[in-house]
Each structure stands twice: as structure tokens, then as C-alpha cells.
Image (cartoon, rainbow, N blue to C red; front, side, top):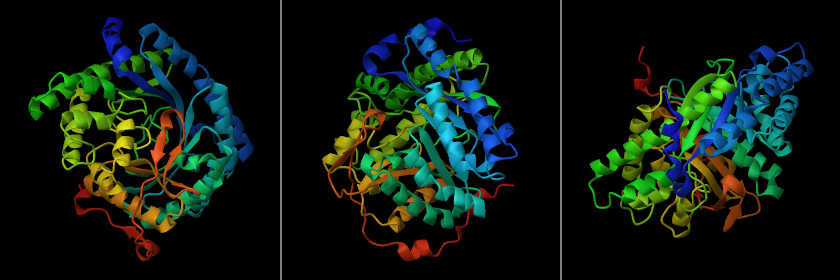
Length: 449
């Protein structure tokens, strides 16, 4: 049992170290909304989401006021839309309904315009994926994801090739908004069913009817704790991170239990990821530099990140009865002021970021590249990340933004999305590799039956 006093002990961390609950996300199953026509399905979807999530924002705000713990985002995730529209079609109509639901419920984002094609694509799923650019351009809060690989099945290179083109189209469709549509689109390997973070959240097929998943965050808290052990050995560093991750996760556990009870939903998971923001003092990069790097991107960065990620998980797992989602350290470039500074000073490039994704949560996240980047290069970048994910049995992802009309400089999204320096990317062509298509087989160790 978690007492309110236990949560209130963290007030100092909230006031001076940017501790917050980054998101309370309600996952809602839409399988029972499938009707005999697209119109009937749309009606059922609207009624169910607004019924279940109508009080989500109000409830989260009440918990935040009572505990003094900021809850930054309130979100909804739904069953992958490609699954509920396979019979009747009308996925773009559902997209409009989902966006309207997000407005009515007052949430920040709604996720689940999703396709799971890690082994193969039906003709309908291919057509569904082809609707993503128009859908993201015509909606405000809807997010989309596509799973193209898994450790068990390998990498669907036909889907990888298609997604390079889809990302380029999405960038062009939202050209007037700095290609921001791409910030709402994630390509996954080993996507998880209980992720509360956008843009990749969807409500998995193995989940209950309504579930509350909470994502906590506290890079500033971790850095402040490490400042007290300057000069100590790395075992002490790991122990310090473990202890503070425990405290952070207890906050998430309390909020998740309270929200699920008040909203009459299942308690799903606490995702104990360290998710940064563009605000100074809330940076994963600065934690790594506190451990001893002159700058993120220096030799040793991957080792420091591996230590941090492991310690966060070890501390968090002791604090919550249900840990899930992605859980670790995020390294989005545009959303982390320390990462931005490292890129600007020439210390951090895409190649080093790719190496870092082998040991942290997710992958190449919120990276802006020149608008002229060919679709085959984007597909190859996705393939590289998928290979890291499948071989290492972890979730990896790509959220990349080819900014139309810009080859250098930076792009400004605002809010939690921050600002991204446009990063150079290799111009040598992988086109012949991508054109082969087919499937990269699963690693041999994946067959454990």
C-alpha cells in the first residue's frame, strides 16, 4: 500500500528538480466497436472513447492537485486501427473520429493509427499504411506507428522500404508546419503493447478493455543525486541511480493506482523511462556528463548510458508491482537540451546516436535531417535500427523528420517537442539494398521453443 505521505516526500524533487509524471495514458480496446459498416464503427468508437475517457483529464488534474505531483500529459491509446477497419474499411473516417475524441476528452494526444506488419503485409494493411501521410496532415492530435520487425520474425524489408516513402510523403504534406507530421509517426521493431508514450502508443491485442498506463520521468532528480557523489566510483554511481529510480517509480505507482481506481479501469503498468524535455535541468545528456563525460558523444558515452539504463530498471522494478512499456532512458534529440547542445558543438552525430540505441530505451528519436534526404536512406536507417532491435531482443524505433526546404540550421516545433538541429546524414546510397525487398530472417537464438 502506498501512502499519500510517501508521495509528498518528493515535493522537493518536484519544486527544484523537474520531477513529474510525464503521462497518464488510458488504453481502450475498440474490438467491440466493429460494426457492419464504417459509419457504424465510427459511431461506436466515438461513444466508447468519450464514455471511458471523458473524465480522464479531470481525474488526472485532481490527483495532481491533491499530491502536488505535476501530471504533464493526458493521453489515449486505442487498438491498432488497421485491425478494427480491416473488415469495413474507412480508416480515414476513424482517424477523424479519433481526433475529434481527443478534442472532446481534452487529451494531449491519441495514439493507435497503427499497423503491425513485422512478418508480412496484407493488401489492406499496405493500403492502410498509404493513408498515413494524409491522415497525419489532416488531424491535430492523432499519432501513428508501424511495427516492421521483431526478434521472433526478423525484418520485413518490404515494409521498411514502404515506410521510407511514407515518411517523405508525410514531411511534404506538412511542409508548411516544418514537416511536423513526421514527429507523430514512429517505425518500430519489437513494439510493446503497453507503451504510454507518444507517438508510439497503441492498445495491444492482449490488453484488457480499459487500462491505465503511467509514464514517470525525472532526469533532473537523477542528476541532482549524482552531484552529491562526485568523484565516487561507478558502483556508487549505479547504486545512487537505483535508489533515486525507486523513489521516482513509487510516485508513478501511486498515480497509476489512484487513476485506475477513480476511472474504473485496470492498472496496467508504470513505465519508468527517463524522458527529457527541452527545459534546462531536465536532460538525460546532462546526467551522462555528470557521470564524467566532457560532452555526450565522446568515447565512453555508450558505456555511461548502459550503466544509467540498467540502474534505472533495477531501481524501478523494486518499486512497482507492474513495470512495463519501454522503461529506461530516452535520447530524443529535439526534446533534450543537452543533446541539442552536443550536436551543435559537433560532439554528437547520427552514427554515435545509433550506437547508443543498442543500450537505451527506443532508438533514433526526434532527429531532423535535410529535406533532400532520399527515401531509400531513410528506409536504410530504419533497417539499421530494426537490426539492433531484433538481434538484441529489445524495442527500437525511428522517428525521423526530413524537413522540407531545409538542408541545415534548425527547426522549431515548440512545447515538449522542442527544437532540432538538422543533422547531416550519409549521402552514400543504399538504394540497391532496399530495392531487394523480402525479409531479413530472425536471429537463430530467437527460436527458443
